[in-house]
Image 1 (tube, rainbow, N blue to C red):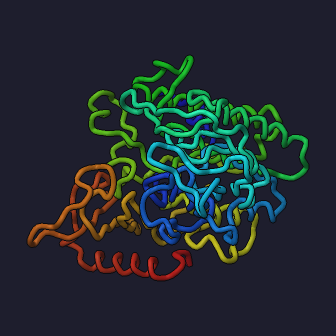
Image 2: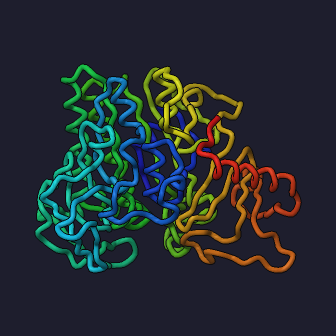
Image 3: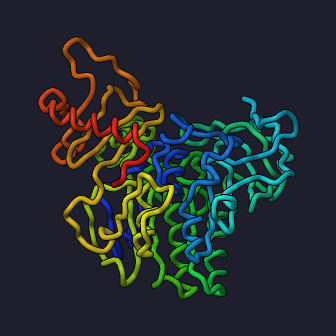
Length: 441
């Protein structure tokens, strides 16, 4: 698949080869990006939220948006939210959504959304493109009430969405392009504003349903998924072009990453030569490397050296402390507990590790920890989509795994029994991080 716009960011900026999400699925990773804290410290210990679940981020918790707003930035969130919203029920004392997708939400009433968490402007889809309700919400108000209902769709690999309430203006195939146009409009509007701006643009793609349209159909050699990724690249290109046309590109930091590894199955690999998770084991939802190791590229003309590559171990929770570092601010108070300032690695080839370790977390709540070259998992199995999810150790078999990720990046050679001292060290460090309220020093 061809991704010229993202390729150009890589060429003109920095490429992190050891970037990880704090979870191998979307809701907890998004929580970590916005708060700088591992999501397993929140009430969400496994899984993801549906479209009507209450807000996972407490209003009292500082967010990247509230922090930047307090430092003079205009802040916006446009796209897929999926971290919970405080909606009001028509009846009863709480919001519920039935298996058939019908909810008791009163969509005519105000909704507490990202605009209550430090975003000056919010225009969002509540959850994923396959999870109801299918409505747009702007600054806490439903743009168009969901007077229609979709029976859902299941038209083969990657083309599905669940049944649920839908607004008449909500067209599944147009959502990605719609959010892109809204983001471009916001960027152009900032020409008239004296303050700097922060835009959080969480795309609905390439998460399913895979819905390539127009010239993107057949554009790749990786099926519908590959074609949809080319649309993601076009969205990135539209943002860069908007910055360039509005004269703001040279003074803007652009970061492109993902919220988990790709859900690229063995069957997909049989059908197409593309390897969405490169050489890494497993896929989305797994504790294996393919679940949480993601692309991470950043560009800032004249500030980030073109073609820089960093091998620093990093996590997407590090955004918060990194932005604080750019602004030369002190430690964030009462938040960002698992965020490290990675800014030095954005602008120079730093050899000394900045981050002590990264904790990984799977869909079903399995933990793993990475420190230096070592990755330790106290259990066996994927903890996610790849079968088997859980494995009971056989007699005399190691109960967990220890991999040398530098010499064995595909996680084939379990060194658990060969290095008991490393196992003990990492197990103790994981327990420490879990028992205390922070992991950054």
